[in-house]
Length: 497
Image (cartoon, rainbow, N blue to C red; front, top):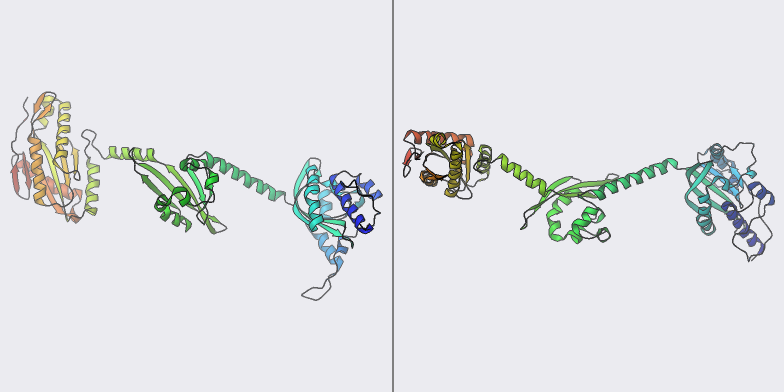
């Protein structure tokens, strides 16, 4: 090894040792100017051949300006450094500071009259940063001549701040490092933002992992990049087996086909909410899903998918809806539920006509008066059951109130079909009713209305059927009436004890 190369190697080792804090005090080190050996017990000492440190401005050779073809003087660069908000430091091979710009003086409180030779770079770095310099910075400087990263700077007792660092190694003609330059920038605000972002991410992760709803993030390519614990349980495999795979891989082609139209809308930037049902022998399960577009810097980057089992809620809704449109005594539709069916039939039926039977029980009041309301209620229940047997499953039967009932015939309807059903109703009402050991007899009057579909609102149908019913009662009760047709029931009897 040549004497020059040995001297350069000794300089680098001394700088490393100095930054690790294993050299003598900075002032004493500056006086001795003899670098400490760094883990090289077998290497003999070589005579020092160091070039005296030069100001930062002298490290830049004059170059011509491309625009004006004028030389750039070293003092121009010095002026830039003197006015820079970044901290610029230069040290010798041992870490002894040879130059600092005003930004460093202001930050560290270094007076202008204080000799720089009393300061060592290691005086201003935290203990863990010294280890970082030894294990990361120095190897990079030796191999590449430059290092970029973050370090912690000590500004005073108990005051540590994060800084970005660009370190440069300046080499001698023989190739050894003879001095070092560092440009530092306070990134404490950025670090706080970064930490706050990480904290928010941790909070959101904790929330999503605890949610009973499944939460996934699908990227623009259709692959999972996040899934929560609920989704892992739902599909029966771990996140490690899911991430990076497509929905088809995880859910299967058939299931994805049901969701695909909604997923495509989300990928196009539209938020989508929808419900899927899954019939089974145990009943239907309902799943509510939401696809929320995910944008990064204004560019579509996938979507967030949220799903939750709403079977219990849906069944409760159905139960409440059933109660809201059903007569609690007979279980038949009430007036509100019947009106909904009439309107639905009006707009969705393929038939051109709609038929309605308006039914009123004859001689029902004496039943209540003689046998009590409980007996009357039981008779109404039995009659409601008979009405259900007299019509098709597609027809609608309702109790409109008291002893008034109505039947809406669906499908192809005409006056003949309606009158045939009315005849069945008259027969059902004329049969005796066994109520708590008593044989009770009533009859019914039926008004039949058949109208064009476009005109067949519930109000119009009931109005016409009511007029037919009035005529049936006026003709002697126990009969049906429709457009002048007067048909009596097989027998019209009053209750017998």
